[in-house]
Amino acid sequence: MQHFEGRVAVISGAGSGFGREFALFAAGLGMKVVLADIQQAPLDETLRLVAEKNAQGVGMLCDVSKGGDVEALAALAVKSFGGVNLLFNNAGVGSGGLVWENTVKDWEWVLGVNVWGVIHGVRVFTPLMLAQAKTEAGYEGHIVNTASMAGLLSPQLMGAYNVSKHAVVALSETLYHDLGAVQGGPDAAQRVVDCSVLCPAFVPTGISQSHRARPADLLNDIAPTESMKLAQTMTNKAVSSGKLSAADVARITFEAIREQRFYILTHPKIMATVQMRLDDIAALQNPRDPFGMKESVRPDLTATGTAGGSR
Image (cartoon, rainbow, N blue to C red; front, side):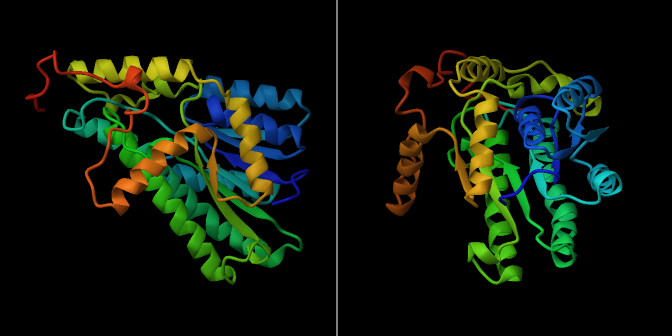
């Protein structure tokens, strides 16, 4: 996708973090934006900031885990601006702790937003974009699914999140190949509708506080375990210490869209750990510690008595 001005971007999770910065970057390029978030006040603030850039924007409350909400988002894009060119399946939440201590509600919440949200976005918008490509001369379309480096690695105390982001990477890779199958193969020139997967590491966003928007029916009715508390502390520290900003990630992402680059990896230093995992798989050896190269962040629960616990 090379041309942005006057075209339409749809962004979920637009009330903060990457979503807000995607919206502002798109607005700066002269795009029209259709914004979705599960919270009204942050969504309104992003719309205000978009308007300050003299860009057109509309928004709606949207729970991406619900297919009907995502279908309504697509209908809003068509009604407001005639369709969509650029889709960011970006809404995401996080939950930590020992993998066996995550509750059913933890799994339902994380997988509902992080996985089903992307599934619904792909399911609803891809046919719309392919149909536009057949009828609009010069049409360009692109889908960006927000995963994480946790989609390429499997760090401790991040089980539900890891699972969800690995699923997004797998879904995105399959989407890439499926789009090629209906558009003549991997030749970039033939891919009028293309896609990317975004895999950032820790960036100062609101992801570590995403529990504030957790639906009431998915709140836990028991106290967090020691591993959950430790995971929250680690995530807060890691996110707040991130060197890249959400605005940096937005800039990098739009550069990748222009270049038709599928993998968008914002923190190249972590690639050594990704390579270590690939080497372990290729050698059929037991997985090494993903935090092995950063001893300072390795979690230690041996003194808490959690080792034998269950839920």
